[in-house]
Length: 276
Image (tube, rainbow, N blue to C red; front, side, top):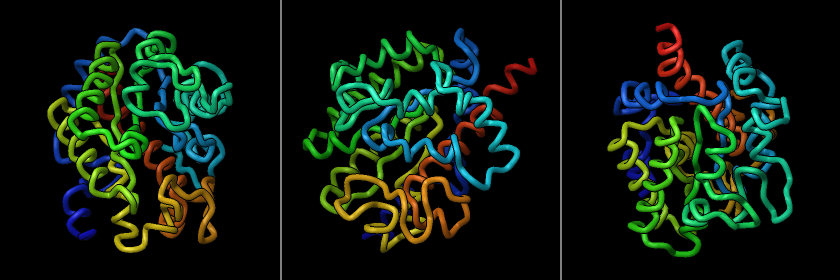
């Protein structure tokens, strides 16, 4: 069964390559941008709130010159409102940061209130981001929300981001042993939205199964199946992104993929607009 999952969701030949064009649709969105360059928000649940997600961008080893440049562009390490990595991890009352919260579902992201987290529309107005990486759905699945409701709410979130002149980057969800079937339907909904709206995407599901088609549980995904792993097999979330380390630390894999995708979107969408 898992081999078929790879075929269905393993979209990328390399981090960022997709089977549909997002460049021209996103250029039209980015042309309406009126905020501060380099602000990239990371919106999600505890796997975004965890400092392990942002650690490679902020303090990781083995960065190429391209990696260093894109991390500097995103203000990594500034620890202020321009630094989306910091905004995703800074502790606030209610088990949340400024842009993520433990247990957050997509409908709660839209409405606000989870742990005191403001609604998505308020975050967009306050920080005026260039891009927004969204990974939500794990807790929707735990609460057994219907795929149609999840897809409808995710479409609303995408439309809010697009209306703000920011580029949405959707991430598929990681596999989990106790809700694999529902998560597959969520990922199918995400991919359909990505194609329909011409969005850049990170295929976390596909990238995990590409590296660990049969033994992701307990290696890249923790034993309870609720989170990615941080330190496992000699790798940590700040390790050099070698192929071996990317097979062992789930947070290293996700953080590295996010950096690569931000760089790709900047190079393909934003840089050509600035040259004009």
